[in-house]
Image (cartoon, rainbow, N blue to C red; front, side):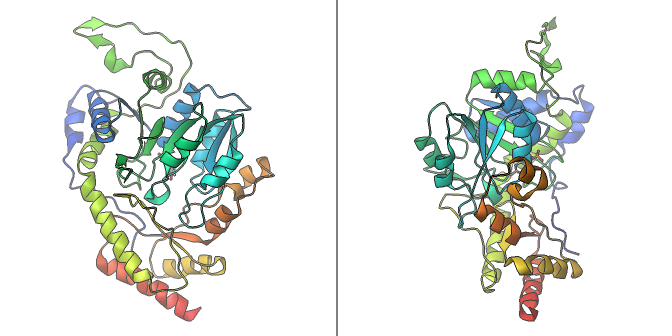
Length: 372
Ligand SMILES: Cc1ncc(COP(=O)(O)O)c(C=O)c1O
C-alpha cells in the first residue's frame, strides 16, 4: 500500500513532553515561542497562532468588519474553506478564473473584476507555486487588503523577498497533511499592530488579555471585552509539535523538492499527462504533486491506482462547480478553473515516499495509458 500522506514526526525533538510537564496547556509560552520563530523567519512584526487556517481567516475578516455588499476575491480553483470563510462573515465571494499554465489566480481576470465594493483579494500559492503578489499589489487601489493564502507554502522568494512581503496578512495551515503539521493549526503574519491586536482578541472570545498574560510579576492584569469574538487560539500542546519543523523546514523542503523532480522526470515521458507550470521564483515550495489528464480518463485512472493500492485524491474541484456555490453564485463562470478541476488528481507526496514507490506509481500510470 502506498499512502497519500505519511507524517515524519517521530524524528522530531519532543517538546511535547516539556509542555505536558509545564503548567500551560493552552496558548502560553510555547505559542509565543512559535510566533517569535515565524516573525524572524518572515521578517514580520506580528505573528498570531490559530487553531486552523479557517479560523485564522475568520478572525482577520471579522477584524476588517466587512458588510454584506463587500466583496472578497479568491481564485475559483482552491480549497472550499477560502469561500466558506467569506460566507461565514456575511460578505460576497467573487470568483476569479485561473491562469491556464500555472493554475494560479489569473491577474487579468482579477483586475477586470475589481469593483468599488472590493475590500479584499486573497491569492493562493496553490500546490506551493508562489503567486505573483508583487504584480497584484502594484496595480490595485491601496484601500484593498491583500491576504496571501499560504496554506500550501512555507518558503518561496521572488524579487529577493520572502513570501508575505507584499500582503497585509499571510496565513499558514498546519493541518494534518501539510508539509508542517500539528494535526490542526494555523498562523497569521502581519505588520499591522492595530489588526494584530484586534485579531488576537477576536481569536480569544473578544477578551483583551489571554489567560497567559493576566499575571505579570505576580500582579493581576484586569481584562475586558470591547467586541465579540470566538475561540480560534492554538494550544501549547499543538505548538510544541511545530517548533522543530519550523526550525528544520529547509530539510523538509529539500526532500520534497527532490521527490517532485524525480516524479516529474518519470512522468514527463507520458504524453497524456500535464503539470501546472512553475512560476519563476526562488525556493518555491512543494506541497502537493498534482497531474492533469483528460477528463474522460481521470476517474478511471483513480480507480486503476486504487486497485493497485496507490492512494490518490482529487484535491480541488472548482468551487464554482460545488452545489452550494453553483446555486448561490449563479452567473459565475470560471471555465479554466472548471476544466482543471475536472482533470486534476494528486499523487502520493510526502517526505517518506521512496524512489521505489515513485517508480511503482509511475509504472502503474504508464500501464494505464498503454491499455486505454
Ligand atoms: C488552499 C487552502 N486554503 C485553506 C485551507 C484550510 O486550512 P485549515 O484546514 O488549516 O483550516 C486549506 C486546507 O487544506 C487549503 O488547501
